[in-house]
Length: 86
Image 1 (cartoon, rainbow, N blue to C red):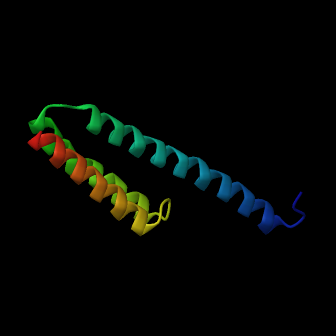
Image 2 (cartoon, one colour):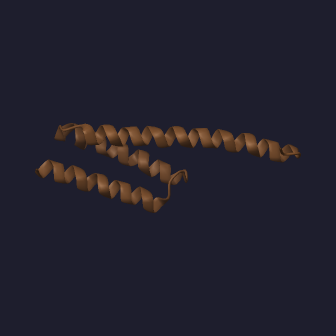
Image 3 (cartoon, rainbow, N blue to C red):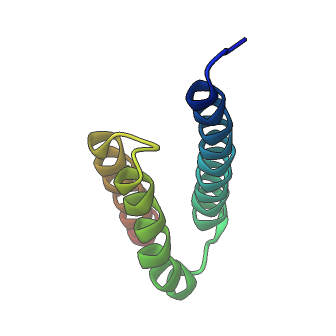
């Protein structure tokens, strides 16, 4: 266990950040799942910018790496475009 006051505070802060990051990550993953589950093209086009913004915010907050965010967004758009043409 930590002995210094500052170290104890750092542990408290990192626990808060961890919980917050888990919440944002899980919320974004659920949004991605629900976006992929929708078959209506109009709803998909309406929700896609919101989900992309959520992914960008995860990258901005360093919850995920910026390249991972780009890969997720690219895969989403590819999948949705393939579903739209099929």
